Amino acid sequence: MTDTSIPSADASLDEETVPTAATGEGESADGGKEKKSAGEGELFAQSEIAADYIEGLLDILDYDGDIDELVSGGRPVVEVVGGRLQNLVGQRGATLEALQELARLAVFRQTGSPSRLLLDVGGYRATRRKELAAVAKNAVEKVKEHGEPVRLEPMSAFERKCVHDVVNAMSGVESESEGVEPTRRIVVRPAD
Image (cartoon, rainbow, N blue to C red; front, side, top):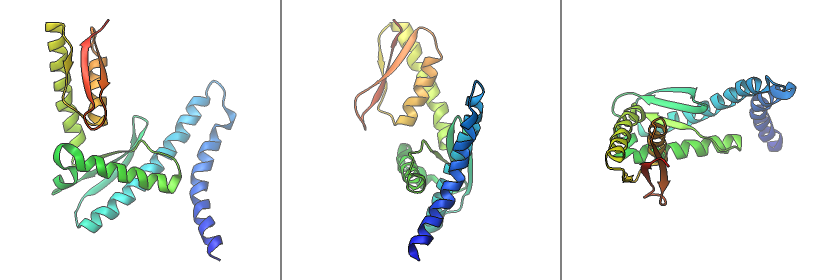
């Protein structure tokens, strides 16, 4: 009897994911569009799983917060907003990164697939993205002025991606990451 209850729970998860993958069976030149919409359904399901996990964690910690799950930029996203959430961000976002990894593990546990889930708490990532854009622009100005590479401080993967995006949008400079975690950093240099 326990064997039938476990597969039925798994089957309901499979039923939600299998039809979305099966919608792309008639792929042709427009197949990418069908596949994308199917992928968005799967991504939204990942964000819902992560949101449930984060909601349970907030309940345990007795924190209040509103949770939004969405898909943005081809990634599942969970946003937590509310007061008294700074402890969930931690120093330089370290706690937020750890919570994001836990939420990704929760998604993996239910789906069997790795997730590129992005978790944001209290708008920290949006604020940090603006700060990093200023850091990147400052580094680009120094490189253009002096013609020498500029090494930035060590950053998380999210932070490095933000800087790379800004630098890649500017002409005459390029960026690359060097080193190993947790001291991996970006070097901005003149383009060849």
